[in-house]
Image (cartoon, rainbow over all chains, first blue to last red; front, top):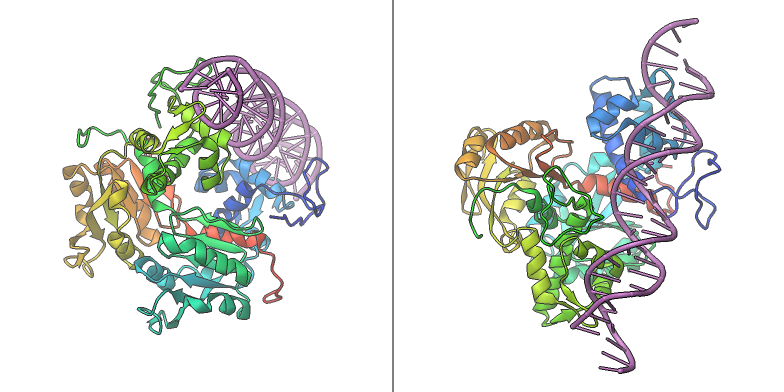
Length: 230
Length: 230
DNA sequence: TAGATTGTTAATCGATTAACAATC
DNA sequence: TAGATTGTTAATCGATTAACAATC
């Protein structure tokens, strides 16, 4: 996972094998929230924001925001803060959101259909351009005006359409096979809704969407007064 | 977020205001994956597993698994490893998954309907027992055999049914209001699918499900060869 | 200018890992 | 017993925070 260096690097930074600065993944994962918040400010006609104000909105510290941004350059003005529109655009460019990314979706159960119909991807730089299912039950039907293809055609479609991003919404038993075929076609980023740990080459980035695990980790903290099941 | 101490505490550990050991949240968040993996082994009739084998399956280090478990006690046998069934049950108890938790779901668009119909919650200790929507469009209709209630009844239903866990699948503009009303009813854990940062008292745990941010952070790493939009 | 806020460094905090004595 | 693997400590690594000089 190589970093892109936009500014001359500080002498203290670490470098990867390409001589580029290694930016912590935890920083990269915060950037979309910065973009989203800055865009909300822009939409509300707020032109300028300080790291302190932005931090309050997001629920992090101002120091963290300034430090995160410093990996990429200097985007603010002392005494003034940041231009919301400029900073949103700048971070979006860093994340390569200044283009539209075609995405392949596999699995069209309840969840897959909800994903296929979701209106939030397109304005966020992603377009689902091909949808696949296993077996003939759904194949040939349409979802959100797209014909459902048999997953036999997954790899070749990914190659032909130059798709680099896949979404897996299949039952868990099929997920690894689908991941393998996505990777074979050139996918480098997978959003995985199936509750399994996918094994992929380390050139491929995976993010898990795992609501059950999220719930299961929260019950640890619930201050429960009932005696059901105890 | 207070920890539960199951074993006498090591002298070096940190304690919270109740004198209980503070277990890092990052550890708690890994436990569901341990449970899931151990249950898969049990289902496959694997009776025993070493930290090394478990680590390989999950994609973490064996040292991390042993250290995580050591916060709660001693569950293995030197030279032998862990009993899969026993360890799964033990961690499930730590996470309080040895009971069924009633859950309230708010928002019944495409996503909310997929959540309401999802078969994976019930075997994972959660039952959606009440579903709500805003406005009269959906109210009175059924989803997964549950009548959709008007969200005017959200707080009182949560109180009456002693619900401690909420799922928010509303448009982002309503999410904070719904969260406030969940908290007013006694909800202490919220799974939030809306792309907003919810402000809640620090007695309430929140987990975000944010597929757009997940995608937007992955594009940073995609080794793109095309020139579209550049 | 005076006040505000950035960008950056060093200090602190916390999490992961390596190592190994204990022990099954 | 010999071999394997745990549980735990100390060392290392990495991320966050506090502080402040630079500067708008």
